[in-house]
Length: 281
Image (tube, rainbow, N blue to C red; front, side, top):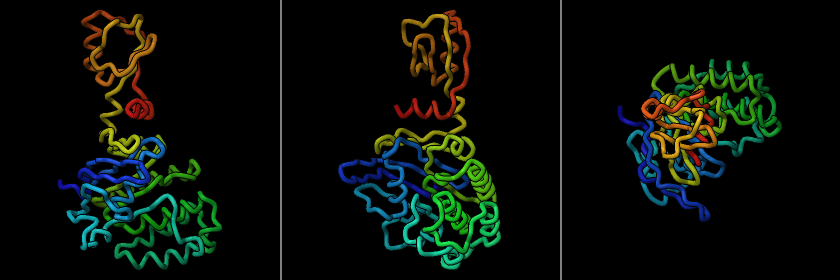
């Protein structure tokens, strides 16, 4: 299946910070999470996809059209939710709904009303008077009902309480199942990544570390406690301490233990956040 979003050797320098070169393809029916340290360039990469920041090099295409080209019809297929909604403070939720809904031919009023009820968002208060958490709930309630093919979310669960995070994740899963759609999101929340992401795209200090299928990533790392640590390197070894060894190829590692008659006291799978931390080192 052809990708809906393609980045090829994308580069951008911002006040001495070098982002890229980055190449990535996003297919329909997938949720891709951008993960990295603070200031790694994740939000700027989203802005480049939306053509809100000019490219220094490379190419970005959405549905085959260059985002910096004269044909901007691709924008009708994307909803972008930045971390901060600019220019909304003076408007109430009712005002924003009346402004946004007519712009989208597939606007889902029933979903909007359902989300407002689930989150308990007051529609008669100005956006700027709402708490950060309630602002986020209203922003999400104005994003999903647009029913576009692609949804781009920058830290969608930031400022939300735990019950609301669960509601958001359930709604996103349900939203994805309705038809062929694609989501790109940034998140520092392990629960978001575990429940939602199909692929993790890791970025560190502006440089791409790699694109990983989440489920394969989780099964591909293991920690072992040994009676004695081998003097030489072990196949699959990623790191070691006094009596612990972490492997990124458990099959090769365990085969080596059997061949060398190395006693394993215990072993377990790594948590996703531990794997990400190792890959970003």
